[in-house]
Image (cartoon, rainbow, N blue to C red; front, side, top):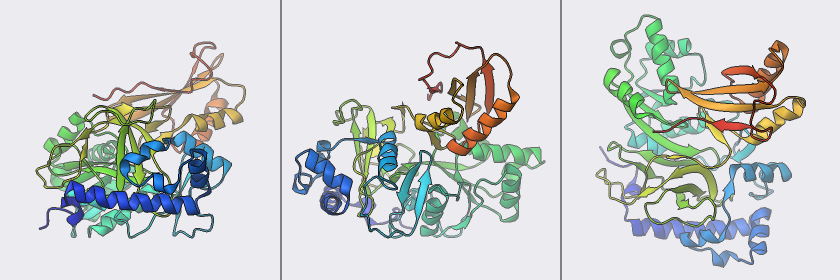
Length: 415
């Protein structure tokens, strides 16, 4: 059995850089010709496409944060001037903000490399628990799984009891989703009287959109016999990196350029140092250069024993910026401001904590006392706008919150 998804993963670093430089130069040239915002940006910087032909030249361009991308798309809907206005695309996805993303191309093996590295193959029956509604996750993970030959059960966000039934009836062998949801499914199966390890065939899991805590990984692997892997990406740029069987860092995907930069300057940090993960996905449809993920990491340049030659990310050390990811979905201050526009006379904050390997979203609202109608109204707005359910909505005395302008506090610790 071949070790890599294709020969690109085993080519020399020099060959990889040469091809990426050629594709980058072509992307810049086409972006300047086709995308109004790119032309305006380069003109304002007194640059021409010929000034950006190799990876190091990207530092001449600004980093674009998710919040900035949202503002761009609000001003010039739907894609912020980052596409050819006459572009025809197969699909358009949306994520909270909102951010609109044209589907790049089905020829791009989006996520397939990560699934292949995790051992997903023809004959696997995979429970895909990501949403297929509006967001890119469900369908793009589905296509990645099909690309490696796996059979996909598109269970989406069905309740845990339904997921248990699918595991049992379909003899599911692998799982795609978040670690917290898999643990919730396991707990539900045990409540239903099952011995998970003995009664089910699930032996492999690939996680994305949520950190995999080492203790939880140990539980999955030692107590339940599930071989676990991690992938890393963002809806705006697709797959960025993935674990192989050695599980010592995340291989950077072949179709992206990853820079590790100082968030305050946008310049690369010294080799091995921690900085913001900035990504350019090489394509000729959506000309988004230097997308700032807000995640902090560093690059490992050591060769991997799996014989893939790409550099690796050393996991995610934390978040930079104001947006937070809760149970796999970003919540941005702009969304909470939308809630405030609907409920103009209240002061509130979102506090994100972590309990038993699960993200907990708590809303604190200043009030003279309990207000059940407000609680119900806020819960509905929060779910509609942020697409995440608030776990707790509690009322605190007026003046307790630090500032009306501080809308999010992330209290999680990643160790």
